[in-house]
Length: 527
Image (cartoon, rainbow, N blue to C red):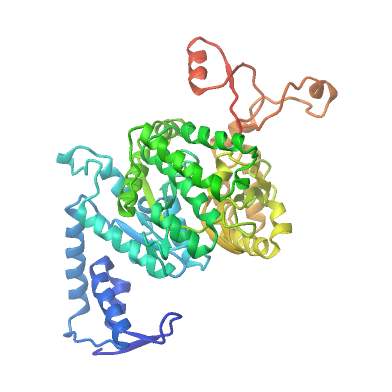
């Protein structure tokens, strides 16, 4: 009631103490951000003196709660926000704010919400923070009278972003922009409803001419450092500055042709250094400059991901999928973990069940010595996820356990992204996996049999479009000789059923054919 203390064992300190009053406030206030400066000051004082002293006058808890909550809401309201703009996550990072349960996914997006949940259940999630969908809505609103931010983050909120980066620095024991001990970040989108492949991602943010040299020395792996730099230059140029990707791909192809190299992984340090210089020339040819200041990189990348919400791909996807009434995308800024640090590292994507048949088996792909974009962009040919067991048996066993935990947590098939850095598994994302009609029915039935769902909830997992897919026309006998002898070529079936039409190689050609009354079959390069 007066000055009771709670002593907590910590791996980073022998002991630290905070009054139970502060802990009560941190747990109960509707806005804990108001007290973050107090907490940080006291923690810093402890580090300096190995002791904390307090002198608080006794106040009624309700009085404190009401006062702090009203002040906090007023601070956010002046920016047009109803809720705090930033939420922390990570295995070793304390959540700074609990959003209302019915608003959590709407504000943090599917990815941010799931990262927070994975952190809570103890999975290895690299630390980071989420900028809410409210921020996206205001960022993309150019109407000042409506409170729009006109493609600019308010300076006070940007200060909170930089403070959140410091939390990641503490958790990772590294420094953003430091040549001697660098922290690199990923910047990813994440709307409340999954939009796979439609939104933008920037990896290895924080690289520059000094950091690449420091990273090479720190890791004693120059190839890894320069590979990370060339990847960042390409992604930043394409996603943030809108440089067409083919300019960078042409450079890669020219270097590989010059040195008779087939795979990106066969490029050595000298090749990668040359590619970095040529990528910088691409910027110059486009009359653009690459920012060496890491905070500027972060601000531009966050803005680009927000703006991606209004991009042609994302808008068209929402139209096709009938996705409406969303505020925008959240932005997840997260400490990088590296799958491209050698043959004990890798990256992959995986469904916990087969999305085509519904069979209960892991269905996915992975690549050794690679980063996530390599898998989804078709840059290299991945291996089936089952092969991971032979290459990294302990990692595969942990990953398999994690998939079972996630299915129990979400009571549904999961679509997972992961990275392995020098033999350590990190879980980067999970979401309810998309599935075909046949798989939807089987998964729903199996989830009931496994006591993960009741019958009513399982039925709701089978959507009208799933039933529509089951009613599409099909070839009657795909095992018969007549069918097999008629096959011209093979590809991945992106749509259900059998169809007749003229081959088209672009979306635009499909639209043109439709306008002319010509049915089409869209054929694209596999990625």
